[in-house]
Length: 255
Ligand code: BTN
Image 1 (cartoon, rainbow, N blue to C red):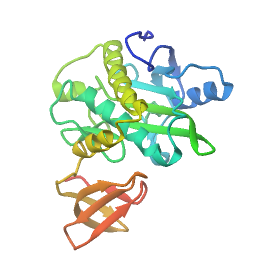
Image 2: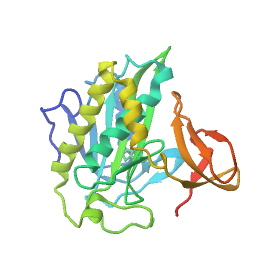
Image 3: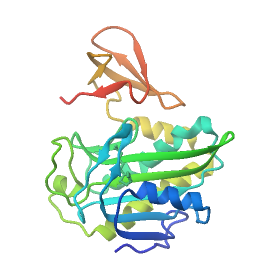
Image 4: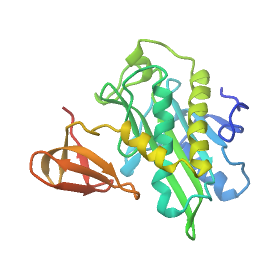
């Protein structure tokens, strides 16, 4: 059971808890479609049976072990051209939460959070654009908290990395505070450069060699920067030059 919280500015003042549901993003989309909601409303479930991930993948989480929820935001102040800032803001909020427990939490482009080289959290953002502005945004977050074993050997949980067991409702509250803080930075409209800098500083591969697959070739490079539109720019090591890639163009390779 998760309660609404009052010590945030926007996120989590209204929490809709469903013991089971197909996808919290889909439920949130229905709420947005119906048109009557407050910004920051959350849909959370303990048992998401048809969770959706990026690139059409499935998000699978053991029931009652993790946080699976969606936040409805209305960042009407954000021009469409700046929508990657929202993704960066969310990733930084989740990373800040993970950093409460581990000292090596990294953002993996575009918005995963990794601890000790394994994924603890993924984000699926679904924006609704009206004209040149983002009318609403559904931020779906899967954060692995207590799950001890994973079918995917590159997934982990905060509990597994720390050897601790957490109370989910308490972690939900802490995560929302981190997200709210991060979103307040974005909403201020004065901290965009700082958000971009923090994102880069905390990005996996920044000034550090990483391997990835691009057009069926295995390459090595370091992250140079991320464009305003959210494309990743890598400095190649295996051959000279730079490479600018979009979301579906590269696949990270594990060491
Ligand atoms: C990814 O890394 O592929 C993104 C995963 C996003 C999963 C979350 S869980 C809550 C919300 N509801 C969904 O169906 N997906 C997101």
